[in-house]
Image (tube, helix red, strand yellow):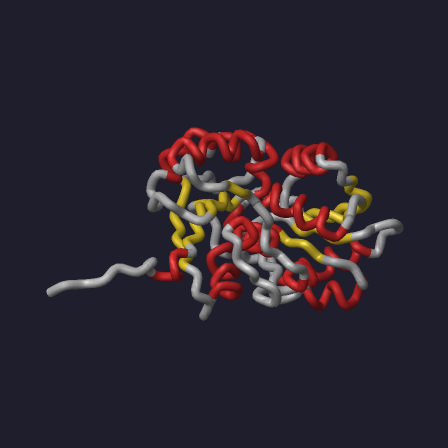
Length: 249
């Protein structure tokens, strides 16, 4: 039999995603954005420790190239799904290691995506909510400061066990976001961690505070879609997905 070829599933728009082995939330929230869309999400897992500490996060670096190599070539974009590790290892180093295996593919991560999202709103003074211990919050604050973003208010659950983070109720995160976001001079709320659920509360917090709310998963998916050249306005939660998102070359 003869056959014809087309661009494959997703009309050739293929998003590669590297998820931590301990993460139980990123894929779930990604499906909420991409379900029913003509986009192909291809994901794999990178070995990660049960605890989130600077040392455990740094230990992922040697695994990045071989993990990226598990995904097909010719991706529209490749996302690395860990905010805190991106801060500890550094976005440039994350991209360098990923592109050893995917040299023609643009790479993003939640930290870079959050910075891009905050820049899109002109927000330089933020409230930050995290599940992390203090030793992880420090590098994250430092990374934001390096991008001209000041954390003026902070709330943390001080939890290092990723299994527990995945089970923090959205009601608890809502309360932390509202409390931190009510501080003086806050221009936006940033909630960190791909394993912390936020999609069910982002718009409610925005309504209460009158401020944009940016979460790791929301920003990562928004930025991946931008890099892929996909107009995704209205696909995801919050004011971020109300913006014209397609990234210009």
